[in-house]
Image (cartoon, rainbow, N blue to C red; front, side, top):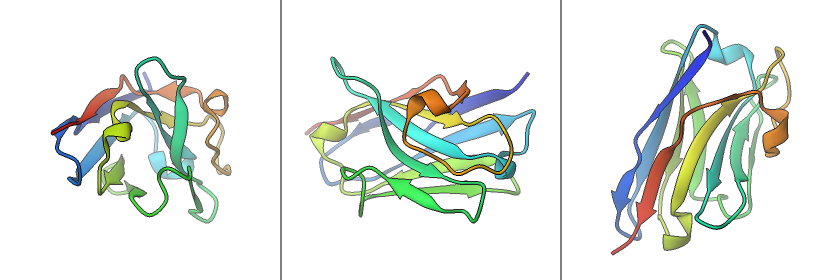
Length: 126
């Protein structure tokens, strides 16, 4: 059973950093386009970052540029989202996601992804 298990969320003060992790089982993460999404209370889910499985190209939402970094550990089959300079508006539930199909360009559109993690809560507050 293909599964994504997230970890790394928590309560952080503004200006702090977090690294979210998403461990994949039953498939080789390196072959698939991956993405990170978030949903703030009362708002729609938005894509914040993605990483293609062709050429390892990345894409970031404007709100994430310069502060978020997506990566994957091929040896351990884990994807990461490093978030620096956290702001209160970064608060929300963060989800990792994987596209079906091999060797694809990623996107920040949730409907393009088939597999999802359970979500991890990030709260930025002083």
